[in-house]
Length: 193
Image (cartoon, rainbow, N blue to C red):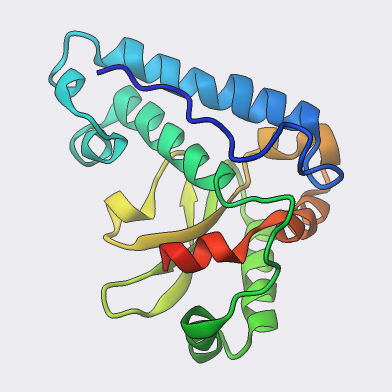
């Protein structure tokens, strides 16, 4: 089965001024697409060619196949959580859980932002839910995905590889993190929860 680049749920210029059209053209249109194309090339003629989901491949692979499948999944998960008409605050049960596990929404956002700012190297920072319903913030290196590696359910993620923000924010990762929350659509995160 051939995997394809999932379409964005918004236009390339819909997230301006927080994420530029140029960043989406490169990050989604070229970078994310390269993971999908590399994965298709790598699985050709292997047992992984028969799998229909990225999750199936991630759970059973390692090396280059794992890296490309996980990065394709991570990027799709990342891009689908944004909206030009984002719901800027969680509500209902998710808000209750954020308050329970972090003290308040603002304490969650501060903790998440600090971890993303302090992260060294390339990777991802995630809000995850464990099997008991406890929320936590996890950081993963490179392509690692907490759903497949740690049995956690991802709810949201920020890409802290430099390619995610360098065109718009250069080395100012903290500005990128602030902008991230301006387009993060909590209605998407509530559905995932």
